[in-house]
Length: 623
Image 1: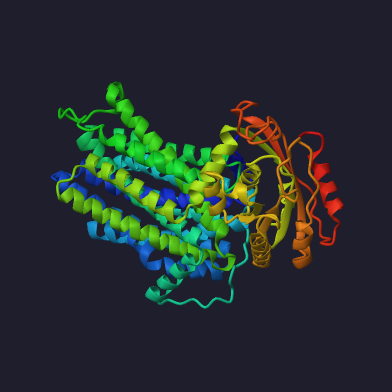
Image 2 (image 1 turned 90 degrees about the vertical axis):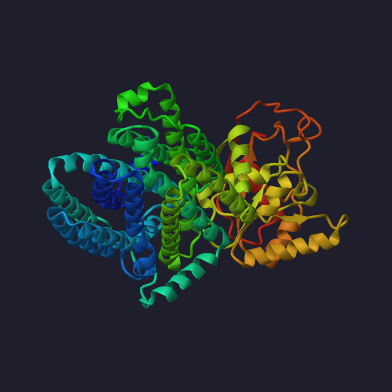
């Protein structure tokens, strides 16, 4: 069972999950009833008119996220979160009472106005939803919590659609009662959410929307990786709103399917998102692993392009049901593309959300998430307008999907160029999941924040990559400059801001610069790792520690955490067979290695022999 599923047994997560699930379900119960009516049941509505109405409805729901997220972010930072959520859910009940009246009156104007109010309530809830997770969950639970939230959101989209089709068939009175009942259920669930202290209770809320929008965007830009993660999330919703909005008419006019085929494909997409989210949790080892983002991005492009070539399947002899649709051999390829788009989306979006939560300033986290929501809304509104413009100009829906897929390739390559950490983490992840199987223990002994010096034995050329792949915090590695300059590995080390060092007899200037950079990094509260042996082992045994580690501690007396690598001796990157990398995978693929952390050492004056003894004891007999 995925660890994320186990979170449902915890009061720290379950009431919040049920609350957000019912809110998302109610949004889609209302929206999808309207969408299906326009696309499949409204008499005298042409394809062009249907495209226009569907895109306008989507845009009106999204617009409040752009308008009101700056205020929502301030409220979420200022107030205790469980109380704020309960008040937002009470607002949902009031809005759904108006929505029920609109259904009973069959008033199109009022129904559209309610969509705007629903979007406003959802915009207020957004910053609380995502900023709550890092407070309520442990760091190792953050990926699982985000996976559950993403899965729940798309499950709500799916079930909201299915239930709305059924309720619309029973009459508008039933639909009116349903939206009220679900809103009350969401409020009831919110009453069980544990209290979570406000991040910035002294904050003065400003209702100047333009000024606050610029302010929260500046907060997001303060951290480059966070800002471009926000851009990446927003781009995902640009793609997502395109697929979800155009899917009804794609099914009807390109595939020749009825509304049940639409439900089937949306179910496949939603389940794909869930599968991708849970797969992300498993592949990341319960850590925020942004190396999975490029894999998800590649899938979004490849399967989006392939979807374009599944065109012209409509027979033109009437709409077909799911059984007839599945019986067509070519339809299976469409289903595969839809599922894989969902899986790719889960792999792409979950690490990005977790990155924003983890690396944001705690006191400004809700406002940064509000900035994310503003960007998301802007991208989604633009996507709706672009879809409306492109389809009105005669672009077919399959062609629109192809354009989205190709644009995705260009956008993500641009982001990865600006923030090469994504590609660096991908290379590290591939190393640890294709060549080695890594077991680790004691890593919780590494401080979650503040300066610390990691010391570790040095067995192979990829020691630093193994540590970087297993330890949650970013690490500044100090390494021999010739390893730092190795092809391919150099890209990774430079991206990770590793510090090259040379012995005094080779390059005394580089050595002095290295110690200055180490001191600066520790002074800024960063995690620094040094391999005190100064060189790779030639025989599997540890070399004597060099005095460089003592020099670091004399200048910056910080906490020391001893680490030990086991099982790397004899591997492709070690010198067990003479020159490293001379024998291709001598121990085969997926050989098991270990990383062990010992208790922190707070005596910065500890003798060099004592530090070496601690590392040697951790390493044990396994080389």
